[in-house]
Amino acid sequence: SDVKTPSYPPYNIVQVDDDNYIVELALAGFTEQDLSVELKEQVLTVTSSVEKSEETNYVHRGIAKRNFTRSFTLADTIEVVKANLTDGMLCIKLRNVIPEHKKSRKIVIGERKQLLTE
Image (cartoon, rainbow, N blue to C red; front, top):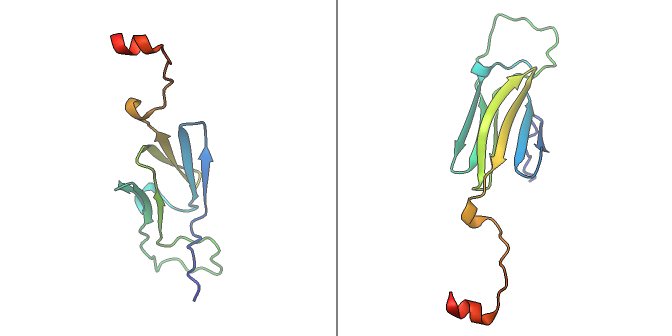
């Protein structure tokens, strides 16, 4: 049997520059109170908890507002900077922070006698 990958909510991952990324999730109709964003053990998880309202009698309901969980596995150098919900778009800003001791650096090649005297 085929395992179906969840397609809701739709999302984009935008690379702003070498070290900054934005995860965009399309969440029309949701409020900040409906959503939870958590980072645990390098897994970024966005979850919704929507309480069903029996008050609204829909003739047609084409805008989905349902419970979901969407997870993204991040590299251990990625930090979550902030999250904003604006105009139905949840934007989560990520930054790649590489510690100085892990950054590549150019090694100057010296003469053999310099190595022995230093």
